[in-house]
Length: 210
Image 1 (spheres, helix red, strand yellow):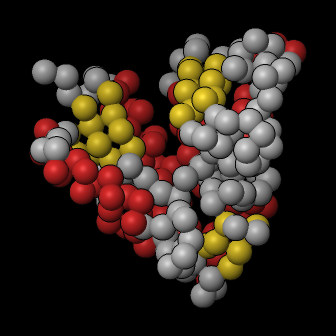
Image 2 (cartoon, one colour):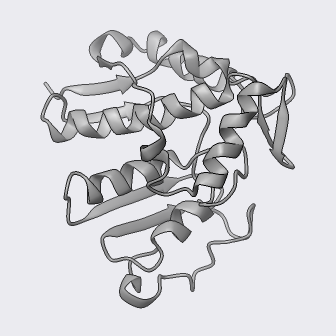
């Protein structure tokens, strides 16, 4: 039987965004209830997340952005952009989210599981190199993809982004590179307004964005 790993941890729910915010802890609770109801959770291999290190985040983000998110833990709550909220424990959750993806990908590479599902938050595909955006603090998938190329020496990585919204930041991070193929199934021109059909990559990355 195929061994599928799952990353989940109650600390992801510590990223509190407010009762009316669409990206809330309830998102993960709903997924977990579904997995339990279908009898799937006991069949999955538990993968404990590790906290990402600063050098993991800096694979794709600049230090000023990392420091800004880190400082949010010293405040009762702050909006990093118009709709991206960070509370006192959001930085902790964001480091665990990035580290959870790193752990999930490494377990697959090491043959412990055949595939893995990282049930993490905050999300990441709108977080640009220099700033948070669209509910996203750090670009978890971008960090994992860069980790696979730079540290694990994979020659090709594919990122397939299933979302009604375009993953602007993930696309931007790899737009001129042939080693990461970015595919997004979004509705254009929904938020954030990027991802038109003619955005196909540039330079060496031409044809590696879809």
